[in-house]
Image 1 (cartoon, rainbow, N blue to C red):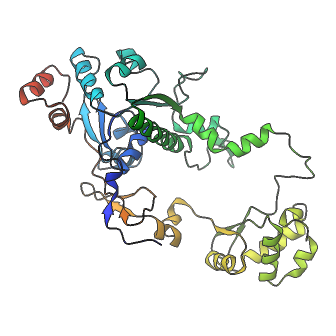
Image 2 (image 1 turned 120 degrees about the horizontal axis):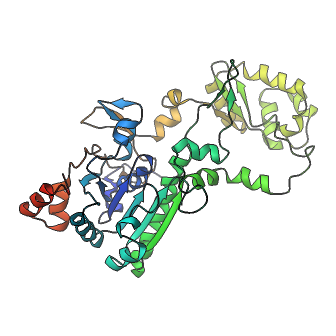
Image 3 (image 1 turned 120 degrees about the vertical axis):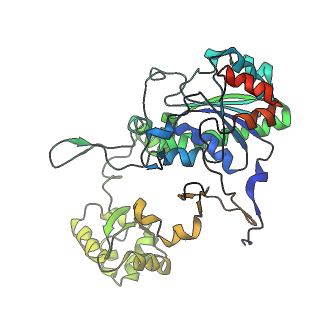
Length: 397
């Protein structure tokens, strides 16, 4: 039974320091750790992460993507092309738990921070690189944006418009979402080992791999020996979309019991008697049944069909868009919005429920170098003279 929240989450990762060398979408990896209370220092070149200017929509001249995936982080400008910055970064690695390289593989290697060097500085360091196609394979150096990982993984089927042009369908960007989430899980597992044994880890993950793994069931099915087409068909009556009186519903009466419950609920035993075998899948070749179901589903609203599904123990789901799901009662019950004071924009908090605790409200995503001086003072104990020296050398801002 849930209890009223009495505390926030930050204590879950309190004491964990993360150095986040990230560009664009993969910065979401460290963003997940922020949501659990880790101290995340985003290390940026003097030009900053270009995600601030690149992606739509823009809020006050800054991209919404940056405002979400970099919220709660501190920004430290460190020009790693300069030897003075190398010394600063070494000192930070020695005092941190995690290093994230979220850009093309090998960025830190080229600056002398190989696996061996990182382990020499801090044997317990957890290093995770997240990139587009990974550190190996013929595509490892191929430039790409997030949607490429989904097309590569077979997640997107091209559509042809009324003029005969091939278009990109509306899609959810699976690889750029799943990759950081999978990587965060791996980082946490490695942290447990590091805390218990003192042994760090050196890991890498590809957003393309993550997109494919999200579709592992279909990929494994394609590799397995399929039954004959007359036994299993992709053109099924169940797991289909139907119009409701005010939208659409997804109907999933795959089990015989669910099919029977549906027919009983609408007082149409004749439909069940037509195909009483293993469920609605048996009706895949029956256009007449398809027409009957189409007309039946049009008679009630989506909300009415959901209530029907609960009452009669049969599987029916709502079909939403990004614009409508935020008004769905299930969404309203499960998600919590927070308003970032500096911009007034609303953002979703991490979707996890912990009894007696609530998610922390993140701070605003940083401007370039906003926390440089604070981080150098707090973490490394630098005084004003040292910080000013680095500033004059253009090592930091």
